Image (cartoon, rainbow, N blue to C red):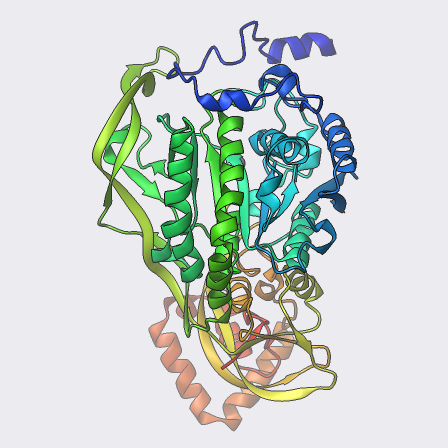
Length: 589
Ligand SMILES: [Zn+2]
């Protein structure tokens, strides 16, 4: 019975995996010469002419042998996944034991945060092979490389031929979310997953100068095979690093990729699924994403999105060029990047934008698109976009960049976290934020944020129910308990502290639901106790009677709801829970 049930619900597709995808533009780039099937150190993916990718055991087995074969490499276990698999980091340098200490420009490349999008792993293995046993050792002359072959290691082993419906290869693909069904590229700020905690440890231990997170797109068809982006200088919290990326990195990489037969493009998304000609949206990422997180912690970060409709081989080879040329550029421009990063770390702005929204005025760009027609489906009985596979260039094509501040805050000098919020304090430690702890109680004049109109998300997202609220600041004389933690914003990770602790920020701990307790009132009154108490108060304070009468006159609920009237007095009484609706983290200004 069980087998019959499965047969009835699972469509078995007797067709080649990509037969349902739109037609391809032909590609015959010169980088195909990088594939070396006869090399004694041929990588597992090259043995399949870059049509398949090895499983985790094969990947790590190859990597361990490669690392042992060269004095340039070290392999380190940086953490364990929820299912107990090791997460590996390769250190590649002429001084591999000094990576992170030598002061050399350091590139961190991370593959497989979404394990079905694994191009970076196979490109990285080929490049490491060519560094150790080919003619590319010069790439490490003045630059160090850190390489995470697979971050989402459990999901890498949830392999199947039907895990990426909109993507051309590899043959077997891993899964987007980790074993606990968390999307790791939404987890940078809240850091719920073991994989993310391992990665943050790497960022703090090795302090790379440039971070590259390699993905594959979904969405529209276009001519580009390698698209990449970062938070642009006009919407960046790291304006010096972002300018380096926009003015030094992008022109150089675009030129190199084009020279080698690839088609680099910007990281943008169609505005309207049914009408591509309306233009594009250029997003500014918040710190839940790699590039938004990098921006807020002053780590220049590039989000690479290879185009899902291009064949695996073309994507891996383009990624190889991207990695190789990034190392080359760092050889000449790495010191300038380090200076830009330092300037961002030393900058102490008084205001911080927490969220950007799209500009009404577009920027006009030349866009290498693919033509499409609107077809009618007999199944959905609705029109849909059908990509034709023919190149179509758009001149003066509008991009609406998210560069207008939507939520902004004045930066306090510090935040104070009560000791009971251990979970929040622990996450800040994992992020590398510096803190100091009170050893004895202390009274300070601090700002408390009082929440009103809380709105809880209608459904779970990333295992959490998010919340937003309106906040009213109040100055209070407050006694801080021993063990309270002070988080100064006068530190290199000050902007990150604001993004995590200022509750209005979209990826703050508050927004992700770490403080839901503040919305629950647990103490209450009995009618037999409060009515005599109110009567006593009214006798003692004639003004209270007057205030109450005015409140009833102005409020329809108080006029008809007896319980609401008792509540009116309770809220003004010393019996009322003074922590209710108060954001527990306090602001020092
Ligand atoms: Zn992805």
